Amino acid sequence: MRKLKRFDVDTIFIDNQIVQTMHCLRLAWSYFPFFWEIQCGHSRTSPMQAFNDDKIFKSVITKCWNWEQKHYKGEDPEGERNKFHENRLRQSLKLYSGVQSVSNFRPTAAKLIYEKFGGDGVIWDMSCGWGGRLLGFLSSSNTKHYIGTEPSSKTYKGLLQMSEEFSYISKKIDIYKQGSEEYLPDKSSLDLCFTSPPYFDTEKYSDEPTQSYIKYPTQDEWVNGFLRKTIENCYYGLKEGGYMLYNIANTPKYKFIEEQTVKISKELGFAQEDTLQLTLSSVMGAGYKYEPIFVFKK
Image (cartoon, rainbow, N blue to C red; front, side, top):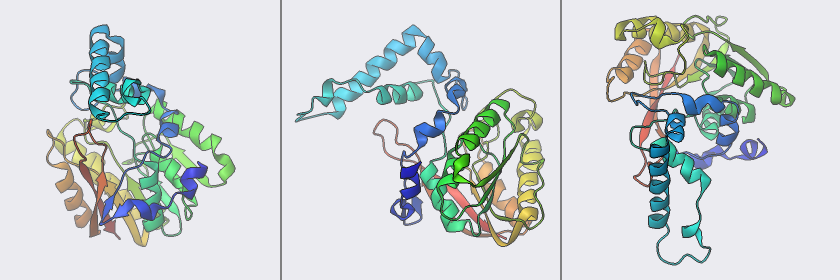
């Protein structure tokens, strides 16, 4: 946490792109060890299922070893080519064919957004998720009050543990176990609404009836019952001049997500000021991809 507090966010903000770093990412994941078990996208296999399948896991080990041999070409004075790196094995497990893992928002990227758009520091994270944005809040220089909504019972428990263990930082944290479409903040009380919500049913965090993909099982129901209602609540809660930032992207199956987010936000009175580009992890040396962060102002 000390390193995250000292981190200079200007070093990762280049030409409207937010460069990824790994600061505090392991710390965030440590509160949610069950994330390995979650099926993501339309993959049939979670990383934990792959780990427990001897045939798949042997193939993962081989793939990881071959990557190490290919990556460390030429001179290798430290003998890195012949070392088996556990972190690379975990990454290989997530990226094996037919396996997909959930992702976490980078704490340094969250810190940047809070310090650039957070105003006087009252924040609503509409879909808390895996704690990356909460860690960013705790490390930011201007943040005072974090309001979070998270309907998953196990994730909610991890968020509470995180907030309790960092209570010495003396910032106010309120986390509610409910969906963002149900939470109505106090009128004109927020400086920033910022999140990365579920992409319809792309990531099935749990099978509880509170999950948006279960409550709103069709595209129209999800757009109007979850997405629109959440944006309405943001507009109600934000101060004049406050910001709403949405990290949300289309998927191969659902091409409507970005368009509907922008369309609804403008219909409800927001002005779109900008679109930032969030760098995602590279895939085994295949280069980087990007997701948009839409910047709206009330």
